[in-house]
Length: 183
Length: 162
Image 1 (cartoon, rainbow over the protein chains, first blue to last red):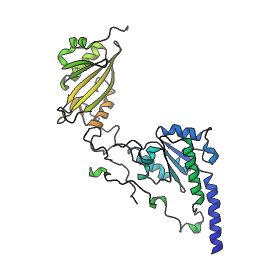
Image 2: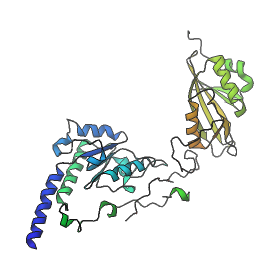
Image 3: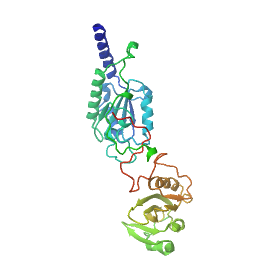
Image 4: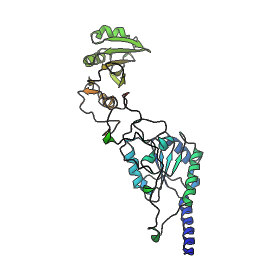
């Protein structure tokens, strides 16, 4: 068994190394952070150096969902649908203060952080974030992918880690979070 | 058409004074205050006599401690005088109804829907009062001062907290 464990670990390292340099982002750009996203993805800062340059124009071909900008309650169903359309493995980046926590929009209309609707792997602070912050976040995400378990063999499918849906992510306490039917 | 002298609120009062309750200058803009039943005659008068053909905006103001509680605020623009004008209509909270201007200015249909979303003011005659900025199922009017600032009405079910 020790040999099998060794082989599995080596396989995970290999798959992780491959996956971390072929991130295909889907930019879900809704607000002014999009300008900063353009800066970071174009020549001066150039996310292509990290293998995360080619934006896909359908979520079905992407594996990194970059939520760039404010998400309102009216838009949350669209974001959820886009996330559900992405194939596994998939990662989510909350880009900027609004996607992370609602930012300074503490009001009736804005979702107070996209982690209330979809699981988030990495949060990028800033309003908008500096390109260096985004690159740092991409590199941290790459480290995480490299260290992850990658169950790609048929025999591994059963011992797969719980999917994103079942993982526990911290969410802010919500005393005043009332579903529409109760208001 | 050549530009003429600036239009003073006295000139408007001279023509349409019977429809106006109060008028004054505010930061260079003429402001007219009137009651809801005079809104349509005054707007048509301003349009026909002073060329206020462009409907710029309708919004509202909530004064919770005042009675009547709301002001519906209209802005118009006159091509001939190159000048804007502000109309204020007081609206009671018990019966928040003002006549619609959709028959005179097409864009009023959409702006009145927004005011209805945000303040709950009805526009008599405007049949299409679906939410335009808010969504179906939203309860309440968020720009009223008594709307709780932290109340959320999510559309998607939130993920269960850990």
